[in-house]
Amino acid sequence: MAKPTKYATPICVLLSIIAIVAIIIGLVTSNALWIIILLLPAVAYEAYRTEGVSTRWASWLLLVLIIAEIICLLFNIRFDIASFLGQSHTYVASTYLPLGEITVVFPAVIAALSILLFIRTNGIYTKWLSVIIFVSMIVAVYIINPTGFQELIRSIFQSML
Image 1 (cartoon, helix red, strand yellow):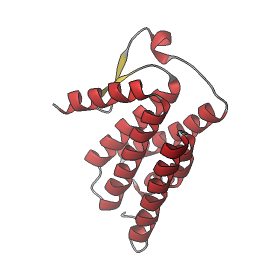
Image 2 (cartoon, rainbow, N blue to C red; image 1 turned 90 degrees about the vertical axis):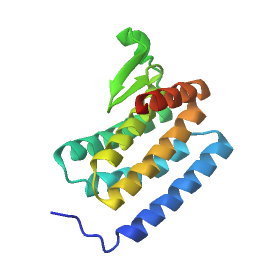
Image 3 (tube, rainbow, N blue to C red; image 1 turned 120 degrees about the horizontal axis):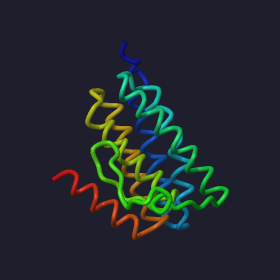
Image 4 (cartoon, one colour; image 1 turned 30 degrees about the horizontal axis):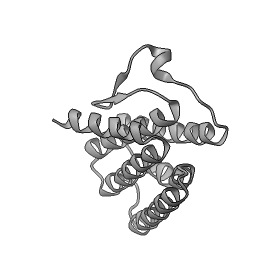
């Protein structure tokens, strides 16, 4: 059954404004934690709005990953997934993503899942939220690791071709 849409537009507008403010603060302070924390309501609302089985799992995984990213950034947890797995890329949501530092991989996976949600959901509000999440995560990756950002953008465009 479809979720009510009576307040969905104002909520999505508010979440868009929060994301823009978070991106500006994150870029000015060079701290992606602002983006990640202030994106949490948008990710939670995405998890609430999605209804399909696979999209519901993807949106809940977004929520888990964003909480894990907050923990990693707050406690300065460093872990190189690439050297642990012995590979430089992995396939997530129809996209080959570069592996490396966990604080870059989590936002990259969130961005890939937001693309998946954009493609697989029918609702305008879930698509809207996935765009907010995607843009925010791309900026977060750029702030955390500009080299990882270049690799992520290259991977995304190669998977689209």
